[in-house]
Length: 249
Image 1 (cartoon, rainbow, N blue to C red):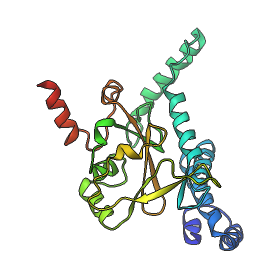
Image 2 (cartoon, rainbow, N blue to C red):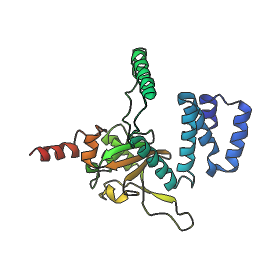
Image 3 (cartoon, rainbow, N blue to C red):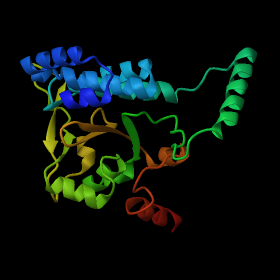
Image 4 (spheres, rainbow, N blue to C red):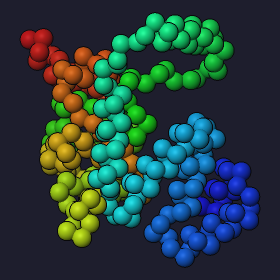
C-alpha cells in the first residue's frame, strides 16, 4: 500500500509515512486503502465522486474483509432508485439550460479522445450492475461473475472459482452482535446452488473476486431489463438466447 500511495497519489511523503504507521497499528481499519481509493478517484473524477467512493469503501469494509455491510448495499440501491425516479417537469428556464448543455456536449463530443466508453444507462452506477432474473439459474455463478464484470470471460470465471477466489454474500448471515454485517461464502467449483437463494433484500446479489473487488448485482425481471434497454456480458448467449427462442416459439 505504501508503494501504491507513492506511485498514484500526490500526498507528501511525510503524510504517507504517518498514514502507514497508523495502518500498521490497526490493519483492520484499512486507513491506507481508504485513502488510496479517495485520492485516485479524486484525481480521475473530482472531489465529489471521491467522497462517495471513500464512503462506499468504508461502508463495504466497515466490519472487516470477512463481512459485507448491509448499509453499503442499501445506500447503493437507494442511489439507483433516485436515479430511476421520474424527473419533475422542467421550467422554461431549466429547458433552456438543458438544451444549452446538450448542444455543448454534442459540439465537444468530437474533441473526446478515442476509446471513451458511451454513457451508461441511467440505472447503472459504478458500484452496481443490473442483470436479468433469467441469469440466476442453478450452476450459473460463472455466468454471473462474467456479467458482473469481475472476469473477462466465463472460462476465466470458472478458473477463478476453481482457485477458490470467488465469493458471494450470504443473506441473513449476520450475528446478533453485528446485525448489519453479512458473511461471505466461497463459491465452490461445480456449485449447483441456485444464485437466487443468495439474493439480499430480494433484489441484490453481491459477488466478489479476490480480497476486495466487489460488485453489487441488482436483479430485475427480463421484461424490465429489455424495456430499459439494458445489456450485460453474456446476455446475448446461453440463458438469454434460450429464453428468447422459447418466447418466439
